[in-house]
Amino acid sequence: MSLDNPKEEYDLIIIGGGPAGLTAAAYAIRKRIETLLITEDLGGKTNYQFHLPDIDTHTIIDGQELVSKFKNQIEYLDFARHIGKVIKFEKKKREFVATTADHTFKSRAAIIATGVMPKRLNIPGEMEFLGHGVSYSTVSHAPVFVDLDVAVVGDGLRGLRAAAELIQTARKVFIIGLSTKLANSTLGKKIKSSGKAEFLGEYHLKTILGDESPDRIVLSRKGGGEMEIPVKGIFIEMGYTPNTQVFAKLVRRTRDGRIMIDENNQTNVPGLFAAGDVTDVQAQQVVIAMGEGANAALTAYDYLLGLKRV
Image (cartoon, rainbow, N blue to C red):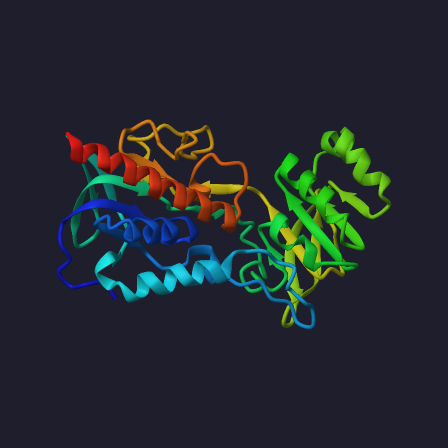
């Protein structure tokens, strides 16, 4: 738990306790920066483990073991964390001010590491089988489904790329809801030529069924009619929503809401850094987020050294 009466002023505030935030906090503390991590939980997406009955998942590279070391350190250092949600964040003169439901904290530098939320289909079975056959990350979990039948529901090119990756390992890939234009694109034709893919553009995914893990899906046809397909994995590649609403008026963002950073994880606001999936880095992977978190902490350290010389 957090301390009941935490102090109000710090050198560095880190918002978000996923892989990027935990790593940033660990590195900052090692540098003897007076640091506070504000987060709703510790671990972020690494708290959701992927498991399939009777299938070896050792091929998943998720950095969970490394993250757990940083998580344990922050759990031990209760003075360095506050469990809560930042509901307001602003810069006043040379200070950053982070407000939760019950406290206000100030710092001379800050790191945003609030992550993203996957866009969901909100259909029966989706949340029930999350981590047990339903995945939002083809990059992470495709290697698990060797010689198995899987389905992909994708948002345009993202879905097509997911299918291209899955045909390397899966026995059969059902591609649901993709437009005819994309199915006939250069990449679409390459996927078709594998002989392992079936495009079902006129259908949408209605229900995911199974016991411990999925074993079939129900598809609904545009205009009427349904059919069932036996599959062991369902990949939902609809993209992500960055958790940046509270920072929207302060930082420069991409069109889809990600925070724009330079090679030093610096935002457009001096002293304000960002790391992990919430930024405009190319891939949303745990090990990448951890590296970004370390880089942001080290850059923040250099920034604070500069402030101390003023």
